Each structure stands twice: as C-alpha cells, then as structure tokens.
Length: 205
Image (tube, rainbow, N blue to C red; front, top):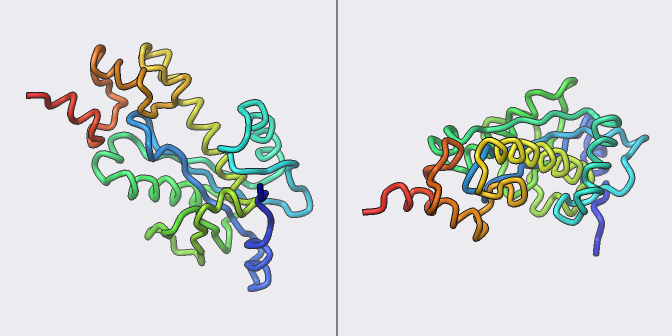
C-alpha cells in the first residue's frame, strides 16, 4: 500500500512555489450535515509522522494526527451549509467550502494541490487537481484528516440534538439505521432536501 509523499509538493517547489497548500473536502455523500473542507500548508522541516489518507487511519490515529497537524502546519477549515448544498448542488458547495478554506489561510499560499479532478472556479491561485490526492500528496492527506475530524465533531453534536439517526456513528451517511430513522422520525432541518432519499420521503404521494 503506497503512502502519500511529497512528489507533488517537490514539483511545485521546482516551479518556484514556496507555500503549497493541500486542499480536500469531506461529506459529499451524506444525507445530512454540511460539507467540510480543509487547506493545509506543511512545514517540510517538521512533518507530522504517519500522514495518510484519513480513510485509511483508525479514529484514534486520526485524532492524534489532527493535533500534530494543527500544531505543526498552517491550516484552515471551512464549511458549506445544508442550505447552500440544496441551493447550489453538492459539487459546487464542496468547491465553495474549499474556496473558503483557502481564503482563510494566513499567510496565503502561492500554489494549491486540490483533491479530485476539478479546480474550484472561485480560486484565483495557481492550482492543480490531483485525483485520489489524499493517497498521493502529504499536504492533501493532512487536509483530509482535518476536514474529516472537524465534520465528524459537528455530526456528533447534531446527533445529540437529533437522536435516532445514528449520526454520531454514520456522520450522516445513508446507513440502514439512518434511512429507517428518516422514514420513522422524519426529516430534520439538517437533512439535504435535494438528495433523493430525503426528497422522496418529503414528497411521498
């Protein structure tokens, strides 16, 4: 199993970039909750140990790495709301979250590595899209960890206000428990009305 490395960062530095930010988002697939993005500029002299795609890490390892990343890098986390997801569509909303995360970095980066195959249109900085970037680039992997941890915390908080959907475990993804609760308990203000399973429950007959 390959680990993310600094290949993309090194190539960007060779082109003259000094502050390279990895950008990733989490939460495109859930039926509820915001979409969350993070942007991270690594200090190449002080890399957090064991950076990897957030999906390949245990919860305990992710939490430990989150602390290291926050202490050792320049980072920002941002969101797009359920209302924005419903108004814009999930792709555009996830790009909006990425744009907000990049805008919140201080100092600003001079080059971006974006997870995925598209560069958000609101970004004016030089950027490249990296497909499966969280498994290839250490900067994007770091961003994937911050985004996931931040979003999971939001969903745990929301689960306490809206029990029964299992958000503390499923983070709003359409598990069988979540789907059953949608039918039995109904739709909350945090559900994405533009997503088919939610829409279908709202507009039955």
